[in-house]
Each structure stands twice: as structure tokens, then as C-alpha cells.
Length: 249
Image (cartoon, rainbow, N blue to C red; front, side, top):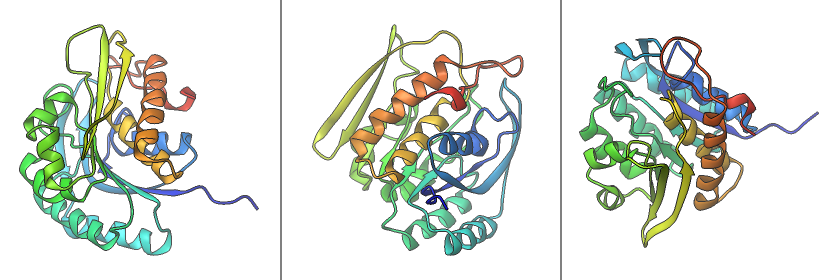
């Protein structure tokens, strides 16, 4: 019998398009040799153009899902996406305290690509950032949350700021740690608009951490995987492209 792949717990909202959210996390983790444990935080009404509605699950239901599955299948890493509500954020913070030795990747999704609001920045900053190993904001989210140094001061170990929202022919991603810049990576900017790139990157980092990589190594490998997935991206509908996570390696 083959040995089991490492478990990674994902807490995120669903995306019926499969481009982002829980579905994107599951695809990414499975393609990178992990077994995804998935906990739903909210469900959305959306298409490849944007989000029409977000409906958060009750905080006790989020906690019950996670505790039940973790009691049976311990996780080697945890990835957090859209939480859905301030109460849900509190429930996840309590869960993280119960599993303090597990690395946590927090994708602080504040809004959809179209600008639809998806999270409470104050709740994320107060409750989840201090418990995270790596926080992965894009440049706009980083500014809204106070910048990388402010995030590090809250207690997270590393901050990866992605440059997809900045101008230029290259996308520049910078990983910050307690001593300042840890690494800077540059990627050719791809044409088109993409749905789920941040979910893919954060889940790929969690996958590499679950396999035992250090943070800097995991971040580099995850960026390579994500860029390849985006390069092979396609349009399942009439809106944004989605990453091809199954053929990115």
C-alpha cells in the first residue's frame, strides 16, 4: 500500500466556477501531491465576471467541520482564504490556537478582482495575521492592511507581497521576514485577466510547506507553479481566464 500524501486543511468560500476559492485550493493541493481537507466558510453566487453574493456560514459550523476532520486526519499545513464574516474569523482563530504547531498560509482576500468586498480587514489583521506563518497579500491588499512591516509587527513570520496589481512588463513579488527582504522574484507579465491566481499561489505555498520545504523555498516553488498554471490558463466562460492547475508542472 502506498504511503499517504500529506494532509492540508483549507478553509475558504466556494466558487461555483472552479476558478478560485475552495475548488481552486483543492485542485492545486491535489496536483502538488497533497490530500486536501476542505472546510467551507461561505458560499458565493458568482460567475467568471465577478461575485453577485456572498453568504457566510455560521461560525459554529465552520469550527465543527474543521475539528471533526482534524481529529481524524491531522494536517501538515493550513491554508485560509475567504472567511466570510467576523464571527467566522474568530472561530478560525480559536482553531489555529488549538493547532499552533501547524504552518498557516493566510491569503487575505479583501475583494474580488472586480472589486466586490469579501472580508473585514480589521478582523483579519487582529485575529488571523498574528497566527499566520505566511501572509500573501497583493500590493493593494498589503496597503489596505498597513504594509508588510505592519503585518510582521502583528506577529506573522513572513509576508509575500505580489505585484500583479502594479504596472510594468514584469510582476515583482517580494517576500519579507523579520530581517527585511528575504527574496525578490520577477515574472514576465502575462496578457489577460485571471481569476484565482492568489488562491493558487497560497495553496501551492501550503502544499510545499506540508512537504517539508522551508518558507523561502516553498515561496519560490509555489510562484513557479502558479506562473506555469497562469501561462496555460483558459476561459471556461465569458469572463476572466482561470489557471490550468492540472498541467502546470
